[in-house]
Image (cartoon, rainbow over all chains, first blue to last red; front, side, top):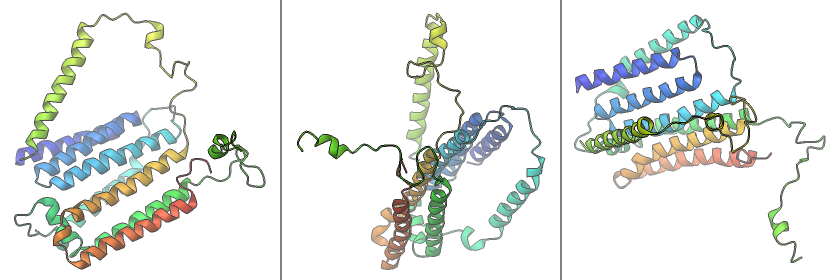
Length: 185
Length: 117
């Protein structure tokens, strides 16, 4: 178990190093997927099977795809020579410090729960909606803010190609009902 | 552990695909041609370079999918332990779903899923 943990954590570190060292951003997303899969397998080898599978579903299935979308959205820079990223160093160190202090100083959420003979998902379910109900509600509010923020950010201003000054669409829309029933009218 | 079956499946499928791909790569008769190795785009000449920015709506659809994906991941443990939960847990989940439904209604009214404005 311990050697498996070492292998997978080394895999995560190696894949993360490849993420930041690959010049092509698409390849770095692929390395990120490999890092996520490594993390999921590490969770499963630690016995946290539900967390591991959700990791694959959410991170690999959705977040990595979102990163691919972001890469396709932004203009690709033509020069791929290495830029100076050292100004990210304080942010990275503070994030590491934040996570470390969070993991070591929060005995309420990291304390050893009494799982008993239940399965992983059963133990999560029996505590998440009663003992830690406020976390579920906070999570729903965070998801709501994310949804509204995404819609507001992606709402495009009326572009002159599609709209005239009256705000009406210049592109004629297809009215399927009229088209189909034209012969019968 | 029940993940041993998944490991065996991964090993067998990986070996099989490497075997088939490698055999066709090694044993196949290669005759490269200008038309064969060029970029295939629906039979046309490539219109543009890949990597040009495209519509932000794909990104919006992806983010909305991600949010409901996360909501489902909160609902899985509830579905398993539904019978053993007290009534309080039921109403917590209902409140959770209600807050997310508010987001869905907002998205519907704002036309976030409409492809044309």
